[in-house]
Amino acid sequence: MSNDVMIYANDLSKTFGSFRALDKISFEVKCGEIVGFLGPNGAGKSTTMRILTCFISPTDGTARVNGHDVFDEPLQVRESLGYLPQRAPLYLEMSVYEYLKFAADLRHLDEAKFKTRARSVVEVCGLAQVLGKEIRHLSHGYRQRVGLAQALIHDPPILILDEPTSDLDPNEKTEFLDYLKQIGKERTVLLSTHNLAEVEASCARAIIVSRGRIVADGPLDEIRAKSGRVRYVVSVQESAPGVYRGKGAPPKKAEVEDVLSKVAGVKKVGDLPTDERAHVFELVSDQGVDLRPEVFQAVVENGWVLLELHRDAQTLEDVFRSLTIGDERRNRKLPPLGGAPQADDDDEDDEDDDEAAGAGGGGDALVAKGDRG
Amino acid sequence: MQNILIIARRDLRAQFNSPVAYVVLGGSMLLLGVLVFWVPAVMGRYWELDRASVVPMFTYLPWLMSVFVIPAVTMRSMAAEKGSGTLELLITMPVRDSEVILGKYFAALAMVLVLLAASLIYPFAMFVWPWQLGALDWGPVGSGYLGCTLFSAAGVGIGMMLSSLTESEVMAFFMTLASLFVLYFIGSMVSLVPGGLGDAISFISFQSRYQSFAVGLIDSRAVIYFLSITVLCLLVAFRSLESRKWS
Image 1: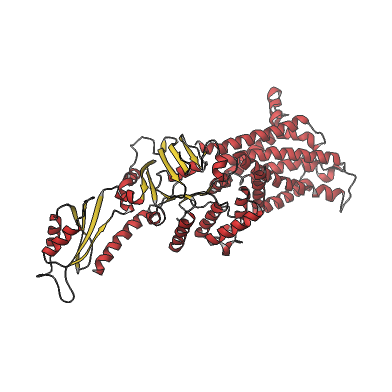
Image 2: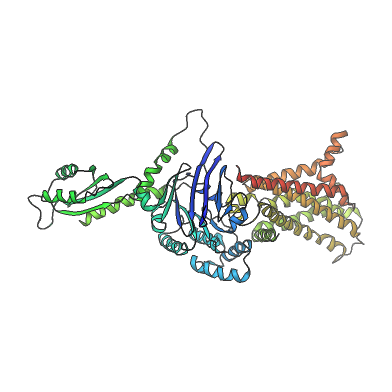
């Protein structure tokens, strides 16, 4: 283990009764990295984070945080990290200031240090207006900010954040991610989330877990390339409001589809929803070859008008879905009759919606492009 | 040590920030007054004793503590934290599990002792100011309060233990109430049960252990008994908190 490895996990396993929440997870996070920890509900994200913060112990395996073993030196581990658990469970009867003071006291910050740190985290987390308010009167978004503030109060080298943005509105999310990038320069951040767009916005690296195992770990580009497929979107003019500039009559949909499917290297052609002005198709090919020249040539040879042609790298979303698709099926399948019901990791939220909404958003964007043509 | 104080202070402040503290404080003082000055019982009514004594108060104090004060004060200490998830944030601060248990224990005990101290108002009002009903022998009063303090220490220990075993405050309240009720009132059965069983009951019962304090005797066996119960319960609470790691 080299010196700049801040979080080190080796073969971590955790079983709850007969349920295997983690199955030999190993990874490293280096100093200054912001790593997105992704996975469907119940995949083991929170369990991993709880092991790293010494809240629970692994059934097997070792983990070190800032060079300290989670088993032998839990206090040193906790001193070097700031942790925000899921849904930011705070003492509701305390005011924001009291809470920050309490966190600072437990971390043995002296009065002067607390003042400077408090000023800084209050500014960063936008808490100036609510400092004297009781936490019970705050919205979920603000509670999450308070949770983040307490995690930062002692200026820790490592931050472990479990779904820190789940209750924030879109503006707050953007603000938070910008801020994360800023503080992440000299810190190590492990961030779990459902929201893939957030990972793309703030992390250079992601770890994807599914059913207690790591299914992908690496820079985002590498993970995107993992599925090994490339997608092209081609849009050909179908009718023109003014003069049609193509040769002959505008093409029929079937003609275009036929020509595109004959281009060498195309594995699959699918049509995408559009209006009556254009035919929009999606081509899938293997990685490594660039089909754009061939596609362009084919359109030109037929005398059609090409409105749009672009190559889409796989989105993280696609990779995520293809890597973790089994989880969803497993969740819907009942155990055999008479068998023991499957134990569930109740630590995770049921927030599948994020994922679905993200996928829908991608589709809409595609349609919009067609419209513009 | 510092952490224990920080945690205890926070817990105590939380108690006083919630209406529970005031309801318990007001309610128990009122009940105590009613019981001591109105309701006839084994020891006779306060007014009928015709002596400068507060023994009736010491008869009712542990009773009140068992069924009301201690369950209400300890129910929140661990159960609420587990239920709302705040325990996770507390424990992932650089604190030891034992510091969490002790901090919460001392906060609950302090709360109960505040209440005990408030009950001093009765002997004070009757025998010092504004009324002077006679020359009160303060010796038994002192030993009575010592007994009550030891009783509270053990009772709060039991409450903490039970509170750490559940995530529901209501469950914690009723389990503590039932345990203390049984532990206290089996003492009344000693005379009904002959032989070894009776001895065993009187050994376990809080009531038989406490009785000597109420009349002015300090029994070292009882002191050790109450302290042992306290330590034992805190150990169980500690183990129960630790068990989250392995479940």
